[in-house]
Every structure is written in structure tokens, then in C-alpha cells.
Image 1: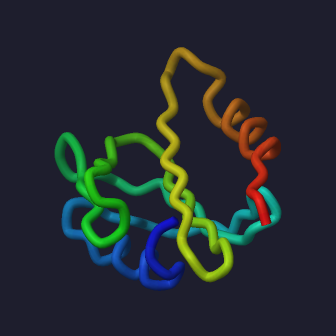
Image 2: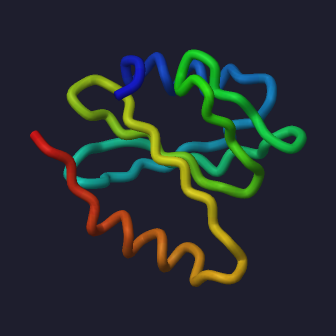
Length: 99
């Protein structure tokens, strides 16, 4: 798990290597969260203070879940050769987390 939920979102919005944009409420595996479609400036964006050694690529979706006060970050990259958002929605509906 990552940093505290609110801290992770605040750090994400403050990154200068991307524009987080508007968030949308979401619920995955019984946990509330927010979903972003951030615009990455350049080829990728590192996520210091959120997920070390993970970089964000353009065109994806970022979901922050509040799991017992901690941030769980789901990074979703959609290939143009897949069914896109429909496939993502189906996958998210099947996810669960241990208590």
C-alpha cells in the first residue's frame, strides 16, 4: 500500500510533469476512490512520494482507492487494439481486496 489516501491525491495533483485534471468518484472492490485521466507532459511522468520507481505513460487512467486510509493506485493503460473502456469496466467489477 502507498501513502495516506489524501496525501497521495494531493501529491499527484501537485506534480509538474502532468496535469491531473478533474477527478471522478469511483468504487472498486467495495472501496471508494477517485479516477483521473491525467495528461502527461512528455514521454512519461515519475510518481515521487506516491509510488517510487513507477512511471506514468500518456493516455492512461489512474485510480486512487481509499483502502483503510491508505492509497492503492491502479494504473490502467488502454491499448487501441483492445475493447478499451468496456474491458476496463469489466475488470474493475471483478476486483476485490482482502479485509
